[in-house]
Image (cartoon, rainbow, N blue to C red; front, side, top):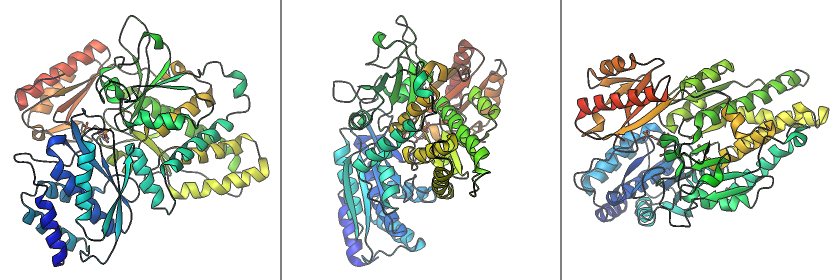
Length: 562
Ligand code: G16
């Protein structure tokens, strides 16, 4: 590191001292805390993103968001050159950087890390970091701190893209690193044009029997950025009538009684949706629009919903992809191009047991990872077509470069030999899905359009979709404890290894309930232990979750569950 660089880092980092008595930890999706303690973290993650940009020679993304968390929290996610999450190899450095107690320590850490990673810190190279934020009030000042961090590494500049959804930023990093323009307008154009392609390639007779599918969709935008962006996108769509509620323009508070996390965990009607919506297809985004769940309000007299969660979105996508592959498998034998992609699906322990059984009965390979898109995404990339979803609505479909490069010529060849045939359409549909579905990260906007296109394609109502299989009753609770890091798990988070004795106690509870299944894990985005329970009845699932939450209290210190 040359003297100019060192002086600049020392001077700038003195402006962003770390908070006293707060231990920051890079969690499930980056750092997340009360916004009031995050200035220095943002500054330091700005430095990290700049170093990553120098190291890779590519664009890096930095997003200020706390996604589903309450409005007073904030956080930061970093997008790697592929558009996916920051490589896990750099997480220990991120932790060390965020917790360095003085500017001198910070500079020393940077010197050592840059040496280890062969990053030249002499201003000889230039690089760029794309930055954006969601609609949280704390976002502007935190983004400013991150920009200072980026500018503290000589040669690296921040390019501020303003207010975006998290998946938009990830998409822009992905696309721009391929040498394409990747503006926000391009994003909307890509989504709307590929959606149109999918509608145009519906089976020949489906227009005639559009009776079950209902052209009415209500979307809960969680009072966040997703609703605002959907307002723009919906103007570019034909064949779909969307009514947006909780768009963030009114009085409502971000994620408070609204949004995908609330709907999926509480299973009750969100604010802004009510008796006038009974029976209508409804969808909820989370605060930064990287999660999507659907639901219906079954009756005016109750506030319960029928949830159609990430597992059912995964199942719908899997059926559709498999169907196109089956059509193509028969036809491609008559073409020169060999197209037999591997297909796999990825879930976490939160996946409802009924969904896993259903997917296996479809003949699909199902694999499990710990919670966190970074893990699921990595696993899904092992397949030519990998579909991953968390039950909370975060997921996407990944197509390998090889798969896409075969699909395009296959479309051309089928257009020559059998234009307009079902096999030609199947190839066109798959190609449209590769453009519609976000290849960088789960995206509520693109996921919504794919769900809508598939429902139209199959002429399915949300009720028909929901009946694919019957969810096992489940319950999720949060338990506040003195120190959540006291819990360590293994086996894709299904077994507690620390503190000793806790897993045995959980096992004894599980044994009391038919079809009982239960696990606990420390959240990586909130200061809680999460409890998930499944059983043959709702009452049993509730009881199992409550008794395990009590065990957590006993083993880890007095807290409160909700
Ligand atoms: C993030 C991650 C998700 C994860 C969720 C909850 O979502 O991207 O993969 O499921 O946190 O994680 P935890 O249970 O560890 O709190 P988001 O939408 O909040 O960014």
